[in-house]
Structure formats: structure tokens, C-alpha cells
Length: 222
Ligand SMILES: C[S@@+](CC[C@H](N)C(=O)[O-])C[C@H]1O[C@@H](n2cnc3c(N)ncnc32)[C@H](O)[C@@H]1O
Image 1 (cartoon, helix red, strand yellow):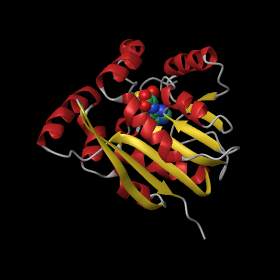
Image 2 (tube, rainbow, N blue to C red):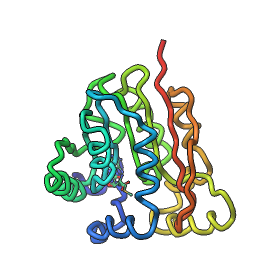
Image 3 (cartoon, rainbow, N blue to C red):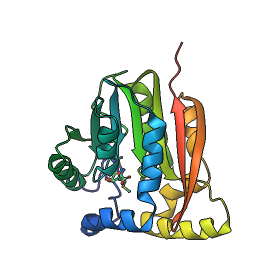
């Protein structure tokens, strides 16, 4: 990976590489991880044989949950960071789950056009600039089959002032530039701009770091 190349620079799971090993316990104990990830898994509704990608899979918690819930589906996880992928691979091997983990970048996916049924992604979009958010959504649109679906869990519009203040913790950690689009409620608009239909917020969770929203959108082509 080229250091200093803006195309391949990324914000690690917990902002600094040395914090990556703490990612799983921090998420589990501080932010209702099981509640929102189980809700997202229920929302994606995968049929046997369908292909699902967990984009920005990090340490693979959601990827594993997808395969456990829909064992007859083909599940892959992709992340830019080799360090988190090593953790994800170890977790999958320990649980005996057959999952492919790929290293790659969200706006240049190593998959053919119209090859996936679902793309699910959790807590990745707030790491991307506005330009890369849109590029990523267009890339997801490309790899999804007609009637394929995009499902997102990420920081959303604050429900109240308390949630807005709580979200400052994420903005200080991950930077104001990439995180502002989320709290400004831009994700559904960006999905629509990328070509998706029926883009909408489906649920919200109050967490100690602010409002976490779930979204979904469908690829409808003539
Ligand atoms: C906060 S973590 C979320 C991990 C996991 N999805 C979860 O919900 O626990 C964000 C992840 O997105 C990855 N990431 C950031 N930018 C990316 C990009 N452009 N392409 C692929 N992965 C990216 C990071 O490496 C990190 O693992």
C-alpha cells in the first residue's frame, strides 16, 4: 500500500493502527453492537445461494453473523486494511465458517458487474470523503445484480441535541470532514444519486457516540 497516496490512504477501524486490537471489545461493550448488527442482518433477508458482500468488514463480526444467519449463502468480506482482515480470518476459522476475505478499496471493487445480490456495510461510510462516498455507492451499484440491495448501518442524523453532542466524540476521533455528511443525513441522497431506488432510513439506535441509522436501497434497472 502506498503511504501518502490519497487514493489508498484510509482511516483505520479505531483511527490509529495501534488501537485495532481493542476494536472488538470497545464495540461490544460501548455501543449496542449486537442490537444494531442483528437488526441489520434481519433486514437483508438473503435467500439460499445468494451472494453477499460485507464491505469494510473490519474484524468480520457482521460478516460472521451473516454467514451464521444465512448458512446457505455465499459470503465475502472486503476491507482495505490487512491487519483487520487477519483478525477476521482467524475468527472465521475458529468458528469453522467458510467466508472469503478480500483486501481492496471500496471504490474499485474486485468483482464483476452484476455479480452480487446484497452489499451490507457497517460503520465504513463515515470514514470516506464525500467524493469517495459517492464513488463507493456507484461501485456498489455496478457490482449488484438487478434488484440487488444495499444495506447500511452508519452514523445518521442526530435525533436530539444530546445525540448531536455525543457524536462529537466520533468527529474528534475520525475527523470532521468525513463524518459531517453522515450527521447531515446525506447517505440516502447519495444512494439515490448513485442510481439506487427506494433509498430510505429504516431504523435508528441511540448510542453513547450518537445516533446510529440503518438504511436500505434497491437497484432497479429497466
Ligand atoms: C469502523 S470500522 C467498521 C468495521 C466493521 N464493518 C464493523 O462494523 O465493525 C471501518 C472499516 O472500514 C475500513 N475502510 C475504511 N475505508 C475503506 C475503503 N475505502 N475501502 C475499504 N475499507 C475501508 C477500515 O479499514 C475499517 O476496517
